[in-house]
Length: 203
Ligand code: MN
Image 1 (cartoon, rainbow, N blue to C red):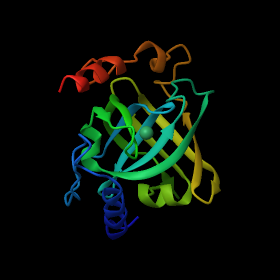
Image 2: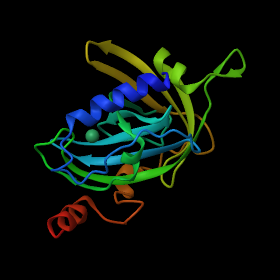
Image 3: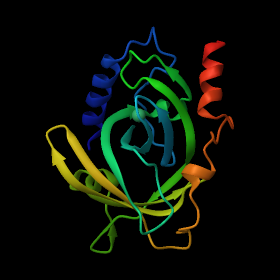
């Protein structure tokens, strides 16, 4: 995706939100690229899910993963593409009024840097092209989630784009680990969803 396109998308996103009633950071369009990073935000909305976001081309390209990522290479996890978010959103942990778009309690469940592993004819394929084409692979260096992960688009209906997230077969693949269940709390604050909710009440 071109920078121009991402900026357009981001403006659309910003318009949707009323920043007077939400504690989210107001996004600015980043001009410089930093080391590519990702975040997985646990989002206690009407239905709990994990928002997987990759910083690409000045925005956070995003998917909602109902069951969260697996470390088992045999597990396929549904990931529904959602709106691009501003880069600053990667630092957000807290609550958003239920009345707002994306409302609920948000936790930074994992974060770190990533490396694009997508290749085309033995050369690295740019991630924005790969995402547009419906298949990419990245190596994630998070605190809970590490190693290669492949994402493949499986269905594309009007506004619903469904992908599958699969752990690649490498030294980090481990069917016995289940970080979604065994490491449920924030990598930033150590808080649980309930604690984040409580803190928001006391502000
Ligand atoms: Mn979400």
